[in-house]
Image (tube, rainbow, N blue to C red; front, top):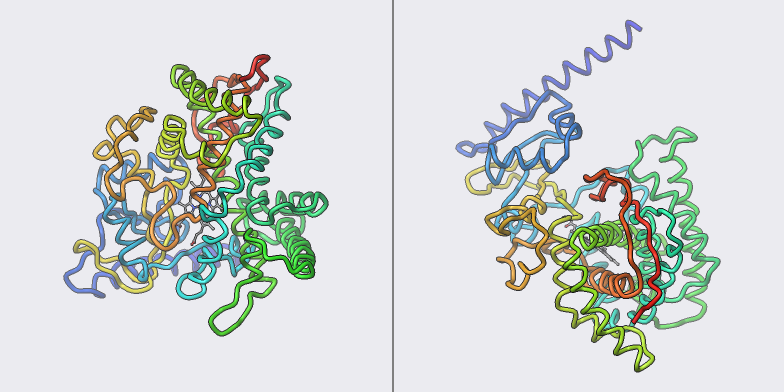
Length: 471
Ligand code: HEM
């Protein structure tokens, strides 16, 4: 017991000294340049407790009100600089992106796989990014509406019995299927089932305490991740034997050769497949859950969206066809609903980078090694750029937002390569939802939960019924 107390005391003193050292040291590093305003909170814990004891967006918004567009804090053991202006976000993500590298906790890197593109910058990132972007380009995804439409229809049909479901959990099933389609094309049912089973365990471990003790969620997730490597290696092996030149992500990764003629290893391919699946699933599911809520809460708007979609549906019924790529590009109102939902919900509320050198921004020092967080949500909710920001108003997108103020898919070298696919799958899902179903949100609780993306409380429990007269 005495040893433990002694250990805690020594740990506390070291943390305190390093905290004081860091403060004084930073003052001397770059004479004349100050650290941004703000508080670093308590030694070691910083302001982590304040952040987690309230809605993180309230935490950031309060700080922004007090200190302005750039301020410092200390969370999860790291000193951070928060940036809440479009110019500052552009500085970090676009114009000076080489001075800021992506940064993720090691525990998360291990689950996804360390070769996944979003952990890297420089040549390796560029090479992988071209491949991922190629497989998600407009030319490739324009062939997907028929398949996505059939996934949306069968997902919705499985909810039609009027029992309460978690909209978010069901939307996750849909976005997983679409992710698998974009990555593998048509994957056989056995592989898909195995992939889903093990990926679900990894997903559950992702936000758990990263301890490898037997029986913990994190440990189970690591074990499932090893199984995923084996499953993916089998799929890769079969695809290599077939010698097909597919345009899906797996095809692009398998056919890639570097300038020196090097091919990607199976591990690099597996890490990037898991990475894309991870980037695609919860983000899109969360956005679609918000869309279901916003449409439910805005009845007049829902009727107008219905009218737009029914017109398409009737046209297709006459010609005996399902929704086409061209139609997904011509849904003016529904498209604005998607954009406004992305702004309101700001699924990726902020992102993390780490300064690779001392950087000066507007007379302030961002010290090397500090985390830097562009706060997308604060920008999306700033009345200077979006009037009456808490109001759900798709018509605001009749005029293009000011440059760098609307970045639901990020910006710069790491901006989302899946943005067009994400928008297309949302439009197709809305098409089926509003033309064939009515729904009712159950429960009286309102609010946001972070999983880690913002989702309506309890994943938006709701009942869905198929309309007897569809278009
Ligand atoms: C509504 C849905 C989505 C949202 C809001 C979203 C948002 C974002 C954002 C903000 C970033 C940049 C993160 C950063 O700079 O740190 C990003 C990156 C990424 N997203 Fe998405 N995303 C969505 C859907 C998708 C889909 C469907 C895919 C793939 C099929 C995808 C694949 C990726 C990948 C691979 C990256 C990393 C890019 C890189 O590091 O170069 N995302 N996403």
